[in-house]
Amino acid sequence: MSLPSQTSSRKRSSGWRPSQQNEAYLFLLPSLIGFALFVLVPIVGAFVLSFFKWNLISPAQFIGLDNYQQLLFQDAVFRKVLANTFVYAVSIVPLQLISGLIMAVALNQGIRGLELYRLIYFMPVITNIVAVAIVFQWLLNRDFGVANAWVWQLAEATGWPIAPPDWLNSSFWAKPAVIILTLWKNIGFTMVIYLAALQGVPESLYDASKVDGASGLQRFRFVTIPMVSATTFFLVVIQMIGAFQLFAEPFVMTRGGPAQASLTIVMYIYQNAFEFGRMGKATALAWILFAIIFVFTLIQTRLQRRWVHYETGD
Image 1: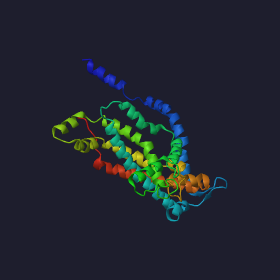
Image 2: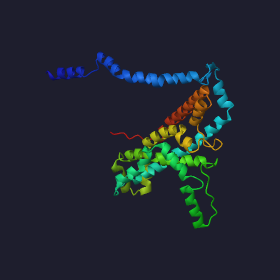
Image 3: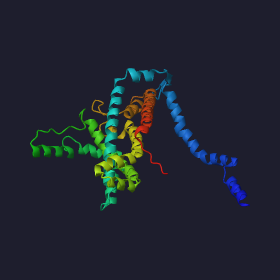
Image 4: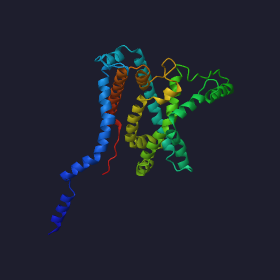
């Protein structure tokens, strides 16, 4: 007869006590203070500053929505960097997802030296982006770069009149050069995330599809892709955000040139803030970028209900 009372007493003792709430806030206080000082206050300050004209020296002058109106309706450079950034996003994200998934499937097989292959393909992710960009400047150099040397060899072997591209000084080839570097640097991260997802796919699904006579390509299409769709959604979101915030790769390789052909929104923010002394315009640019990323993330979140498969364990 004493068992129910002991059970109820145990439940009451394991419940949340009011005094524990204050203890929890006390432990959270250092993080909350850091968040407020270094994240929340700068965000609010940047929003307020976007309504001012300020060059870091003279007193700030309130101009209302002029910064936003100038960017959206008068600034031709902003339209160009916006188009460049969209080109980067729609090029980098799909290529990264497809390549990362193919590499993950290949490295999820039982082959010798599997750990070594995974390490080799992941190593670019942990390399310093500035050092890598400088190396790619040499590789893609018009006169003595390895890439153009291969193009010359291909032209000689095939007899085709192929002219090696001027990767870093051409308005057409500057963006592909940045895209190649970005893919080389980040595909390994995509591969590792997909690899973790693949190892969570139940083997029974593949066995059942084999019994039904599905080929390898059919198993990949109807089993692998749906089962990693939640991971794909996660990667699409974070990689789209990263593509819109592209900075170091074009900044080191091309400085946004030639003729602003590889200039991105974040680079334009940097230029306005620290090269042109237009802090108000720079912060307005940052908020426009935030709005673009927010809208794209919201659209992706809405659309994922149609194609993302979440496995439920019963």
